[in-house]
Length: 254
Image (cartoon, rainbow, N blue to C red; front, side, top):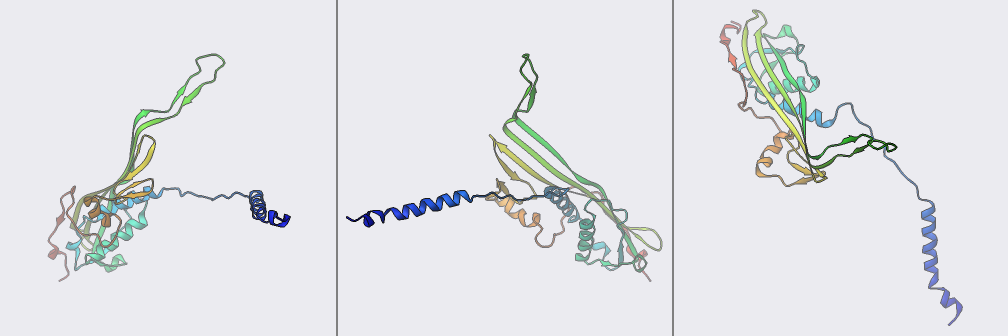
């Protein structure tokens, strides 16, 4: 056998080895720049979903047929743009005649919020993080890391909404919505260091490390409304103050 025949099988191996050396020598590193907003997306979803739930309980139909101006100067909410626009949409969707100028309206509607915020709670079953003081001379103090068996956090938002209307000319009260309350929540669960298992009204189901877990029949029914698809239907609130509609004939133009 000739020398050329013996060398030919070795050439592909030599080329492969040379290619690997070139790739190893040219290996680099990359990075992704990440930024964060001053408010988390979860907080914003919690608050706006709680507001939408409360607003969906208000029946604006007693205001139909009369030019109305929405007075929002007394409305206090961190998401005032969303709050104001959703109020206008809900009123228009139920047939209310809105006017851009107060002078062109007969009735003035004033909304107000008694609550618009979030709370959170945590539960830990395991060993919490703790500092260990120096007990032996020459040995520094240290700390024991948190060792959770079960760790659960729950963040929820609540909104309290009330509206009333009065006649612009006489100043008399003509309508009162009563008080409605909306709520939403977000839950995170870690078991034995695994997680998070996420659920809550803002998610429309349950997720494990970002992967959807098949929803139950009840969650499946609620998901379209919680995700904001379509119009929000009117329903009687679970917690509500007494609504009042006065005799509107006394305030309509003759």
